[in-house]
Amino acid sequence: MNGADAGSCIVVGAGISGLLAARELRAEGWRVTVVEKGRRVGGRMATLRLGGGNFDHGAQFFTVRGERFAGLVEGWLAAGAAEEWSRGFADAAGEYNQDGHPRYRGSGGMTSIPEYLARGLDVRTGERAVRAEPRAGGWEVACEGGLRVSGAALLLTAPVPQSMELVESGGHELPEEVRGRLREVSYDPCLALLALLDGPAGVPEPGGMQIKGEPLDWIGDNRRKGISETHAITIHAGPGWSRDHFDDDEPEITRSLLSLATNRLATDLGSLTLETSLVRWPYSWVTNSHPEPCLAVPDGPPLLFCGDAFGQPKVEGAALSGLAAADRLLGRQG
Ligand SMILES: Cc1cc2nc3c(=O)[nH]c(=O)nc-3n(C[C@H](O)[C@H](O)[C@H](O)COP(=O)(O)OP(=O)(O)OC[C@H]3O[C@@H](n4cnc5c(N)ncnc54)[C@H](O)[C@@H]3O)c2cc1C
Image (cartoon, rainbow, N blue to C red):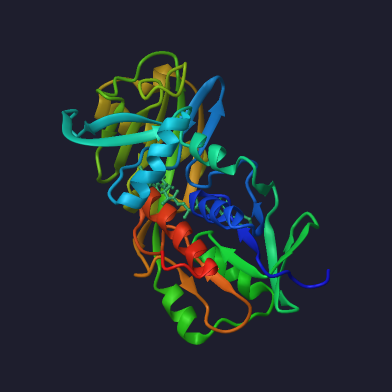
């Protein structure tokens, strides 16, 4: 490999931040390669098919606050990649609280949006980046399966501990000040149980119960949400419960979460359940973020960190962070 070209970038991670950054750079004529360890794009905007049901198991919906994000979402709505779901959710008591603010979802599940954004990009899925090394004024990234990609710039969009591990794997030393700032970022874990049911679970209108507590944080009915033809529910444990039980055996976690949700919904989920799957998210919500929308490492070939840990959290924050990283590489004010 003969070093890197000007106007080229390796993006690690095909979540919303990485895909939006890649699109911006591509639109300015950059050569961009996105490497993604998952089989599909989307990262934490994830939709899984299980036994005939469709489940959103990471992000459940998103809201819009700022103008720049609103502009993007308008485009997704017009393209049919996103839809409005509701203007509020049921609370812990089952009361549907409508506050007038739209909550959006991907049209076929949250993954519809990243899938739409990935069109026309060079995205290599199923490629886990395991080593990143500065080479000839740019970067070279090696993936587990043997793929090697090079670029003038490197954009890391994975949760921060994973990005730090990758960049340090090749012996590259981050300045102490940068390491310190990155180490301040923290996340909550989330245990997500997906259950395919034989009948309705009794999740109240509009198919989402936002409990925001412990031991349960959320119960979503993917059928009422409009993304599954069969009865398919997503149960998210709260951050404290998830931390305490993160490494427990799957059958034990499954039993507990079904029983907790049964109590909450007053429907015997145990007798309705046909199939389950457990997803362990070590990094779900950001609990302490970096104040700037991205972080550019001052020395060496261009190296940037971005994602939902930079600036604002959630889907909107991640999207804006990806755009900010692209702005930075393109020398735009943003
Ligand atoms: C359970 C849960 C519930 C949530 N609920 C909501 C919600 O309701 N509303 C909301 O707005 N937000 C929610 N969020 C947060 C939201 O999903 C994230 O803020 C957002 O999707 C983050 O996008 P990102 O691009 O920063 O990171 P990610 O989506 O995590 O993308 C990073 C990508 O990098 C890839 N990657 C990591 N390491 C490597 C490697 N070594 N090589 C190659 N690829 C790699 C990952 O596979 C991933 O695809 C939720 C998250 C979770 C987990």
